[in-house]
Amino acid sequence: MTEEQLREVLGFYQDLGIKQIYRRAAPPGTAAAADTVPTAPTAAAGPELVVLPLAPVHDTLEKIVQDIGDCKRCRLHERRNKIVFGTGNEQAKLVFVGEGPGADEDEQGMPFVGRAGQLLTQMIEGTARKEGIPLLRKDVYICNVVKCRPPENRTPLPDEMEICGQFLFRQLEVIRPKAICALGSTAAKALLGTKDGVMRLRGKWHQWRDLPVIVTYHPSYLLRPYNQNAKREAWEDLKKVLHFVYD
Ligand code: SF4
Image 1 (cartoon, protein in one colour):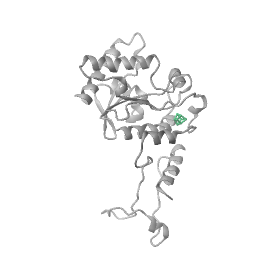
Image 2 (tube, rainbow, N blue to C red):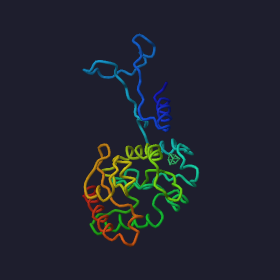
Image 3 (spheres, rainbow, N blue to C red):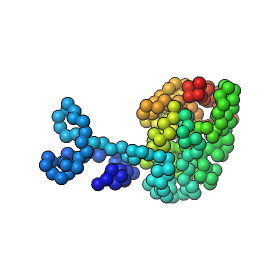
Image 4 (cartoon, rainbow, N blue to C red):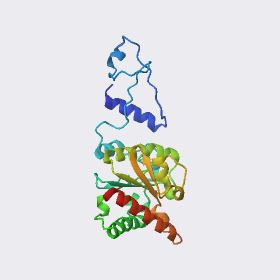
């Protein structure tokens, strides 16, 4: 089996929700044992396992789009119009991760194009301008945890986040930004595996793998008229991440 075929098989099991697969070591002297990729010897006794990443070694955003294809891996495909992959600078130093597409995004196939998206653009460009950082929305990368619109804009379910999250993680590994800004608690949950809400998580640095993460409010939450305090806090969070990335 080639590495690519193995990746597809593992991806299939991951889509089914199987997170751990154990490989039994081939008995010495068998053909399978001869095929085993040699690894550096370790001090530990017992069989050595070569764990292959689910993403291809030289992954690209294009390959991820191809792998998503006409995706039906979770129930969110049933009512979607368009898959919303992500937009922006593919070498961005800063990536914003939202929850999932809304009606406008589902219609246009682009993330954050509705009212919340306009507010996000204002927040990015307005804060950058005030802070003297030459940055436009097109300079960052924007994507979501799930790529298809959840019905009635409900929060994505854990299994949907788990399945679609593999594509988000591949996007982040390909772009390797200097920092990630998680917009809202769903994005924070997907990246940090926490159940804590934004109020508890915001204002401090976290980590997804080895990349720094800042958590702030989702722009759609900020559109509610009574959230003035949250707006001010979101601007603070944005200032913090912009200076970290672009100073
Ligand atoms: S949400 Fe993600 S995993 Fe689910 S169908 Fe859409 S692209 Fe596939």
